[in-house]
Image (cartoon, rainbow, N blue to C red; front, side, top):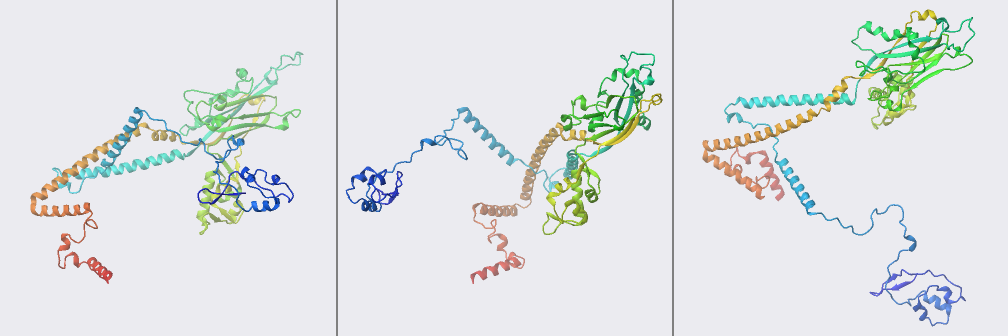
Length: 563
């Protein structure tokens, strides 16, 4: 790399057009060594000794100074490089000029904002009447009545706020109520041998004979606590299972019927409490190893909102029925998988021993876990995020020390899905049973949301409440302005009364007060104008300011500084 002398002072600088030189052999021609040597450099070369000239030319300056050229962009760098870079092109971006109407609108908005800020700063907020107002009004008892009303208003506001917070907490953390879901299971039969519809020994035409079948119906209803026991134990629709010929048109295929009426349209139905149902048949009674199964699953849309409006018919029903072929009694098990929000789990025995619960939500398990740690005093003193494990916790945490932020993970490892509700039932197809059929009844405990939650939600989102608050705010502003006017009148009354009782003393005290205020405004007095030149500092004697302990200490400090 060659160094060139500057035109303004001789300081060397690096050229932008420099070609790297390679050392040639002694007998190599000079043009092979200097591949891109400047033209003026070859014109000044008159030496015959090529090797010596090569050594001296690399050590001495033999080039003219020339202006430095600006670097040029490579033609291969036209494409924009990736990575972090400016999103806008370089250079100034002229702003779009505003029109006269837009400028006037901005100025008007600024003026309105400034005026609104001034009004807010000058708005009176004090609603307490001044002390001693009883001496200035005609009816002194009115002042005490006003104070009593203020106390009652403060008490009512505090009560309303507390109750509103309680309602809001109940809506955000709804409580669950336990109800009884009664389930009726019954079956009807068709084309059985004892019904006389099958082929006889004298008949040889079997084309018109139908195969024997049965139809199982599962029906559920949420019991009301106020209903009488006689009404709970019986259900008229269950007796319909005794009729066979009247139900022939209902036994074509597996059906899920939705019963809707004005009385029951708002009630929770059977499908609202479960997300799936399966029916397991006794396999030992199957012929030729054939298997039968019945399965129902709730649609995904209904899983997110089990009690929402506009549910499909497959997720909004009170009874479900299925039909199968058979002419023998058979045992089945109906499995109902619960749907609960939030979801409930079954706890492992290790976790159940710690929190003293066998099933519940994950949040309840975490809270029970933390209560166990806190009551036993297992949290470490130095590191509050850690806790020591006793014999029960070691089985859950699987260690000697646990980490409090990982309580959810400890609990999640010990959760299992709740087992389905198993309802055994025997499908009867014999004639003796169907002379007086009786359904099998089960009572299942389910959890529902508190019905008061809907009414409480209406109280929280009531638009009249916001309008009422706006009216109360306007009344408070009017009251504050009235109290301000009363305070001003009270000050005027006190001024005139003091001036009328002792004019000379009042004027003297007033002038002294104005003097102190003026000193504060002009910045001439220290500590609010109290610089030792007031009337109280001019008085002497044992009862003056100079006889106090503060004055003695101040004088001692001043004298010690002078020493």
